[in-house]
View (cartoon, rainbow, N blue to C red):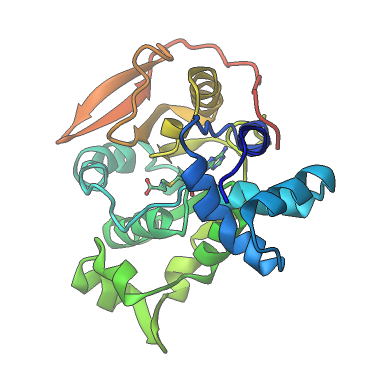
Length: 284
Ligand SMILES: C[S@@+](CC[C@H](N)C(=O)[O-])C[C@H]1O[C@@H](n2cnc3c(N)ncnc32)[C@H](O)[C@@H]1O
């Protein structure tokens, strides 16, 4: 049975309110496919009935699961490659020079999905940082299920086949049953936290490099602007931000300038910016 317009409006309103994700008309098939497993788990045979139950007997945990199910978590190790190459060859040399007094780097993977992005960053840094340096990687996502997977650090053969070079697999992972488990050394430099980018962010400190990749595409322009504004407050004045290849700040937030770093585009703050006050359309 297909969803009625009213049922679809309830789900798209919920996902918009809680995660700022825009589900346009025509995405009914996506809602049905993503919610069917939740309905079945709850012992309900149709998505329609499950949605009605969620609407008339609101339970925060069910709403959270619905939002989780409607996030798109596509990711891979070293996704698109170029941002990681740019970080290694164009950005790290400057950071190693400019942070020589503290010998510490702070990186944020702001929509980390199942963990491939923050672990890629951790491997890259572990291999590139000179002795005596430390890095601290914060990895956040709105999806509790993705965060649990990322924290577990266990990947299937299919997942490691996507983007992870064999020498890195050997160096940083251990085979445990059917999975590849990330090393303790790598796991120890990454901290995971649930965070809604569309809500006012808690104090997180500032970062040398921020990856906000392949998440702005799900938001409307006001939310993109609000997220970029919040990120600008957390990026060190000489820090670097990376977006997904289909994303840009151009026409949305002119505090950033796009810089070519090798074959990737990175973003830096223009000099003399004022902090952006927190204002966000979503909620935490
Ligand atoms: C397509 S994945 C991108 C993963 C990774 N950054 C990459 O480029 O491979 C998008 C992620 O954004 C997360 N997401 C969606 N809306 C969010 C929000 N409002 N706040 C934080 N994360 C969000 C999803 O849960 C999902 O894991």
